[in-house]
Amino acid sequence: MRVIFAGGGTGGHLNPAIAIADRIRQIEPGSEVLFVGTRRGIENKLVPAAGYRLEHVEIQGLRRSLSLSNIKTLWLALTSPSKAKKIIKEFKPDVAVGTGGFVCWPVIRAAASMGIPTALHESNAVPGVAVKMLEGCVDVIFTNFEETKNHLRHPEKVIRVGNPLRGDFSKLDYNTARDKLGITGKYRYFILSCGGSMGAERINEEVLAFMRDYVAKRRDIFHLHASGSIEYEAAKARFSEYGLDSVPNVKLVEYIYDMPLQMAAADLVINRAGAVTISELALLGKPAIIIPSPNVTDNHQYKNAKVLADAGAAIMIQESELGPGVLERAVDTVLGDRAKLASMRENFSRFAIKNADLRIYDELKKLVNSKSV
Image (cartoon, rainbow, N blue to C red):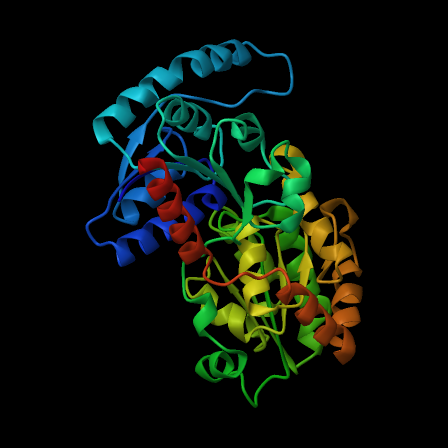
């Protein structure tokens, strides 16, 4: 099978596509896969690292305010499909898949106009601009949340498949993970926290204060926090300033490289509300305190978090609500109530769909076969 993936800008758009591509190559080793992105996105790092070829088209998003940049955006929206068509003609795909970001628009639009089978994958609860613009011309729309189809004009095209994940999140259990990390018999609770791979200054401030004022006094809790690469030096300085270097049950790292293992062992996770993170938490059934980022397109992290909070799967705290004692009270609410912990695990697990990458592969094969008849 020959597959083009269009998506980029963030890891939330790229990682599901790479997970699908990996599954396709596992099942059909002779498959050819091509990614299309922009020259500015994270795809330029993630795609080559995953071993896939990457081509580029020039496209950018509209600014909400009046800007000369929007004139260029409109021009690129008109001209970029011709560049995409050239890439498509040379590659000759059996199917084209868009996973989010404005780069989806020219590639998927061009593929559909050329009669190539097309699909979209929307990982967030509320679909983004690209998905809404393209839903009329594609054959199928894969979703992570059941609620997503309520925001689309063509719900009949929707197939809920979950969110494809990279890593071994489905292969680890709580007790085994705790044994591997040396937590069993040493700590009653394990709190895992982070604010994204790059870091979030506000979350770092609040979590480090929480470590100082709460965790340092609770030796039955182990707390691991990842500050993110950009914020690490500042967080490390504050960690030392607070005297946390000498506290044995807290640890600060720049990045968590073995996230599946750490998350499997955790009793409570404090994190953002990106679609990939939510899917990881759901698959493991992890009680969570979710702090949605206020700095994302269409405020989609808040919308993701609200779905979870309304279902009793997580506690949502908006960044503007953070302050002295807020995290302490939220953590006490969860860890101090075994029934609530169990309820949150069960409610979050209801959002999980296993083997999303395999489900998507099966549907893509059906789509390709139906179009070739």
